[in-house]
Length: 455
Image (cartoon, rainbow, N blue to C red; front, side):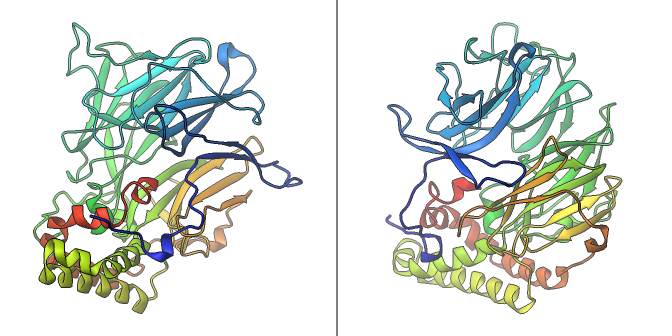
């Protein structure tokens, strides 16, 4: 099938190489590109970087390590932020890394195959991978006990309570594991969370520490949640391995009717902060004794899907028939019309809390740009300034900086546009079977490799 992207997503020229840029903190110099990916034998697709981290090898001078996504993940190193070199490696598996941490003198990297789940987590460590090859942390060797070691593909990782915590996707549910000691060892892990209160949560896009708790976000099955929005859930774990639901819950969602049952959670906020289009809790960051959570707002994808279906209508009818094609187009047209009618604020949200339970919204509109559909990174620098980087496949990312979040700009979390969004939810649930049955066709038309990979 030869589907194509709608014009609103077509760049000219198309350049998909990953890049690294730097910026002087005082703002006296413009942004400078310091690295651009090039194709290499055996790794022809290099689509970008999901993680950068500073690590001090052997306790000495700091170096920056960057994990490059592609056919096979690669790690780059720089000691000055300008000159970058790809580190030789024959150990790492997987196509990208969504998490790296530095802990007790070692650099840890969790990798994953973005096209399929890994039965054994891909976690590696090294004091400095330039000189000491990566060593697998979790290996299925003789004596391996599946009940005392993490299972499934690693989505995220954090250091909390002087232990390493990882979140995995295992048998269609989220698990959170921690090391028993300060460093990981074979058969020396504890399972802390085995499935969220809502069993539909299958992956974790963010982990972060705030006020002696580890916060973990839960996202519903992908790519389904991109087509039929399901808001993310949020839990927190204390130092004694107790966990509780902060946002969302909804212990059961039936796919045939998409009915949410009531759930008790500490914030009294439903999934996605009462917004099903908040599919990800994408970043969790402490800043000046407050908890920040940024989202991925899926509302813009409704127009992308509708435009894609319309521009490929003839091909779609040949594949799935005229009736199913008309149902899909009518459903997504109705969604776009409702979003416009209720003046839904397109763009990602940013939420803030002083106690980790009660939240207010900082903004709901992607910082005034509806094409900023994700708050992709929240970073606090050495001057205690907060940087926010956006995900924007329409006209490119933006980077914002602040040294203060004024309290007068905050709005208590409430229903927002939930009454209008409920109509969308009901309408999509009525057409759930047709959408779900034809999901592979829709994704193919949307060019999975070029567009959906960026999510």
